[in-house]
Amino acid sequence: MTRTLALFLIAFLMSPVAWSQVADTVLLNGKILTVDERFSTQEAIAIDDGKILATGKNADIRKFVGSGSRVIDLEGRTVVPGLIDSHLHGIRAALSFSTEVNWIGATSLDDALGRIRSASRAMKPGAWLIVAGGWNVQQFKEKRLPTQEELIAAAPDNPVYIQLGYGWVLMTPAGYRALNISTEADLPAGGRFERTQDGKLTGAVTGAQSAIVALFDKLPLPSPDQQVDGTKRFFRELNRLGLTGFIDPGGNNLSPGDYPAVFKVWREGKLTVRVAYALNGQTSGKEFEEYQSLTRLLPMGFGDDMLKFNGIGERITWDMNNNDRPTEAQKDRYYQIIKWAAEQGITLTMHWGRDASVDQLLTLFEKLNKEVPISGLRWSIAHLNDASEKTLQRMKALGVGWTVQDAMYFGGEQFQQQNGAEAARRVPPVNTAGRIGVQVGAGTDAHRVASYNPFTALQWFLDGKTVGGVAIRGLEETPSRAAALRFYTTGSAWFSHDEKKRGSLEAGKLADLAVLSKDYMTVPVDQIGSIESLLTMVGGKIVYAAGPYLKFQD
Ligand SMILES: [Zn+2]
Image (cartoon, rainbow, N blue to C red):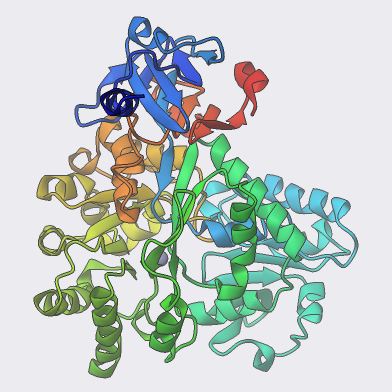
């Protein structure tokens, strides 16, 4: 072969639009919400080798069909980019997914206790029944907590542990016996027995978040096999709801010993959700040493498109966690860590609750930004539901993004009682953030404090209603359907540096998508929460299929 011919062939093979290109998968006859810059809708999509070749009209995309192509008829259904939760404690939730009892979506206490009853029948006597979170009193039509008597009646032969958020745990006497807790002194520091007004014990434990975290840590861990099984099953459950990625923000009850399950599933090539994870120092006062040692062999971004290291957070230090009035010494220690992170080019996400005190944090970020610029590092603040316009402007100036969760779905009534209806109308102010240009990612903060269902969160973005059905948010801060979907896709992808790879359905991007059971754009808002995926793809591979698409299961 002459040199000229060889060069010609190489140029031909490398040309981006080879005219005889064949797709391994083609989806036709759909309503494909690409979530590109213009939020354009297309009919069809061609996929090859995990990536999107093209989107367009049926006639144009049909040209990619070859003899070996898998052709899927969407029959008019709506397709969205795979959803990405920018703040989901998914690694932790997965470990116990196959061994915990789930109260997510239970509409009555009766239903919830029924799940305990059937779990107690399915499990051996003596095995723990654990509800680790993801529920709230407002979701029950009875609008009250379970009593210890009800738990004993539901599971007489098993120790039972029920956690609500990070403030309350109810156990049965068998549970207290199994953990060797007989007096208040046996509880972790900061915990106490709850009493009624006339001083009677209720069977519950309340107190500091750290006490509840430590109490949970006393529970036996699922075995390594159960953890791997739970991880696979939890990720398929996310696929069922159209999720193809999440950013894990570290956090409570997640130590290095909790990662082998997700690493094993990744190593086996069986991950069905893309995971970007942050590491979190766990020992109060020793966080800086822990970050330095954990990241020494783990450079920023290390991993691949399925699993990668995405920096540190969400609780950088224990003593700045939910602390509205940190001391100078506490701030100095914090500053030392964030300065180091900026110098290493490490992404950081920080949990912050209230706008009233966020100046404490932003002042440190601003001081640092003068020393070591942070604007390119994709730092973010999580929660901060009542962010003021001024705060959002400061975040914008720093290039700091905002991960927004549907915390008000569970906590809206309480927020309204504490801050008034007027303040609650603008919570969270996502339209103001959009106007200012702050990057917004959507998510849930599941599964201790919320459900992981992205459609619950999307419906809540659009109607502002709590789980109890109370509409709290005003129109001024209610995003359009398109904007809310953008938060859950490209918006979230930004936080793991991935918006050029995924989050929208455009040529060259990873083929992560979900075919929905209902049209997200036109279905009545109160039905959005019940949408599920019928077909979910991650990198062009079918990871979940139901109904008409069962036959396509990879
Ligand atoms: Zn948090």
